[in-house]
Image (cartoon, rainbow, N blue to C red; front, side, top):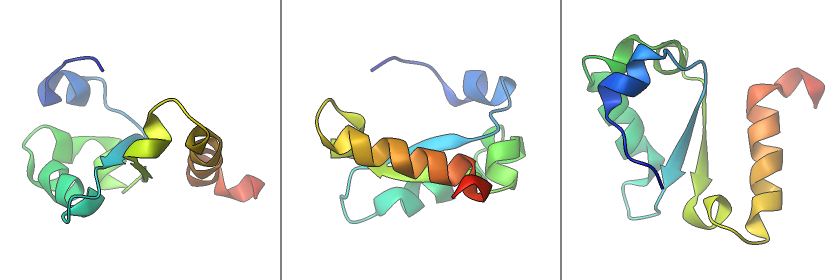
Length: 82
């Protein structure tokens, strides 16, 4: 995992975000609510247009769940192809 800050991410104006769902009770919604309230991130295209996919921790770490994650990302980014 790399380190950065939200201002650096926002400066790049992401078009799409992958949200990590730790499945800790708050789910990805907790992170999404944070991003919608963050002064810099709330102005990004991804947050304004709600362009994101939530993936479970197991889908973002090496293992067979990566196959499912690839499908989720593809469907979220290009729904017209499915």
